[in-house]
Length: 592
Image (cartoon, rainbow, N blue to C red; front, side):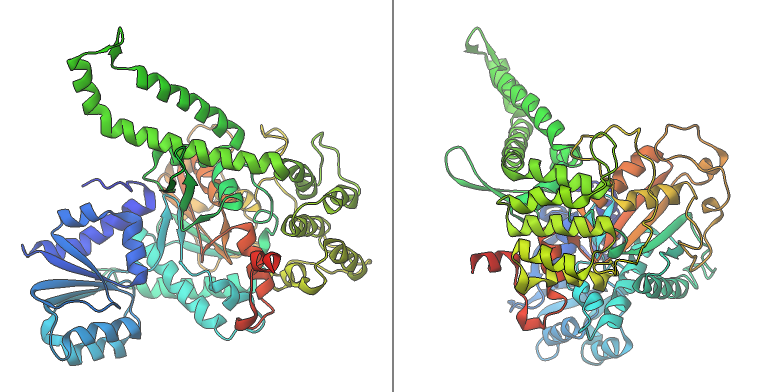
């Protein structure tokens, strides 16, 4: 059965759910109730629709934690996380008076023995099936996953954190379930001198070995054609702070989009909302394009709409046969028109911000980030690039972003210089927006005598780019180097050996069309999985698709605890030094 989300990771997750939960339940012809916790609700919503569930004889979907009417004649499927809270709610459904005829229990991950024994003690006679299906990650897009845990940022990077070890343990469990769902047993590598990446790599490798120790046939699983690289947010502080001009990244930065929902006013003044996901094929087609290309494409699409409206009329009259044809096309036509209208509005919103401030900011930001101006001349004095931004009436938020890019460009600045910058931006009481980057291992304050070498970047001078989009995220270099087997083993130590396809020479360039070499053939169908501790930006997500598109022989999948927007990241950075009760956002401060 094809679902709307027939793409990559989402398709794989839905297939896995069908092959386990749905297949078990198909054996019984009775209509069933599906009971979900908040995580599995989100997981299921991401990969299927209610109509898909109805087709599988699931008639009601309920919340595990809300009070529910008993339906003693129906069987219930419980799809939940293996936590004490979920198990207690499950036991409560059967302990005194059973709410359902029987229970089919599916856990997203390994269920601890004490919880399992508790269930057996109270509910054994009602449980028909109890399985762990290894799926505790969120398929965000075709090639993007998250652990649905924005709080991991504070837990890992706050000096006051009490639960860093526990958070890394949880993330490692989630990464193992991702590999299990993809049926991959990858070689694991991590970025050197990044302590959290190293810890996570050790945990994942140990748990993968345990998971694959014995497969169903009793043989030990060999490594598959996959590599897992673990890095930390500090590898590239620039990408999540820059104003991006590709459609998806720009929209999530400048427009208020919550839970992937874009709210806008229609021409008649009514409030409308649209979900930006992979069911919207126009979104999939446009999301990684530069806003200039998007605007041009949408203008063409609008012309198509008006041309389509004239269809079906001949000599001003509508014939019956034309009308019949139009009626057949109507649902698809209406969906297309709606999609085009949404993106016309969203692109317009983005362009209004661009015309107001972003265009001017972008030039300075790109010069600071790349270290060269549009002509390719080295920026000798970054302060001259930064000053016009500080002297203009931009928002405090935009000025903080520019100051950070200035500091990153120098690999840190002096205490005295930083104090002057903070006075300029008038954030004397909120210097944490800048200082707390040190918790991510990003140099902020350095002594005048200290000189640190910035890592060399790939030469992209021949690449065709827009003047205001010259920066390439560091993670794209990493992806290309990994695919081409050029990652330095001292920079990227192996936590475990990698399969043969990822060793040796015969590498292919990710940026050039190439003939398939024998190495390339060996690696066809292989996967590179990248996990960033501390969040990923939309521009980094885009890189996974770009490299996959260029290489063809290898699919790149990228994931993190959560997805970042510039504002959200700055709020998180500021909160690193606060206690839980003291956190507040940029917006709250500016409204105060």
